[in-house]
Image 1 (cartoon, rainbow, N blue to C red):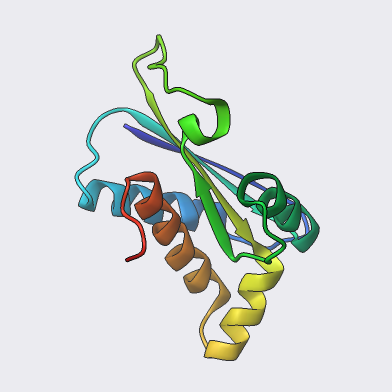
Image 2 (cartoon, rainbow, N blue to C red):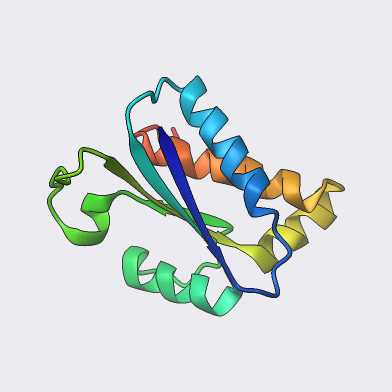
Length: 128
């Protein structure tokens, strides 16, 4: 079973149930069938800038970042419960709202698109 944990600031009206459903469906479509866990954090601009500065050494406000367990803590170790922790996807809600308005798209749809994009990175698929 794929478990998705979503944490967000209370003032960000993101539908956690939609994010979980779409991410589970996306991962299954990508061939993930084993027990795994993915964390999704929905943060503000300040937090996203701190994450970018710490992990990427930049000052860019990213809309999405994702990190595998080994990128966060060093070498990968399989957990004793057998569930694989794929990693963490971090979304910048204010940036996503701006992008959705510019594109004329729904905010929830943009959130889900970026969660899927982050998941691709967790699966080792990167930009060319």
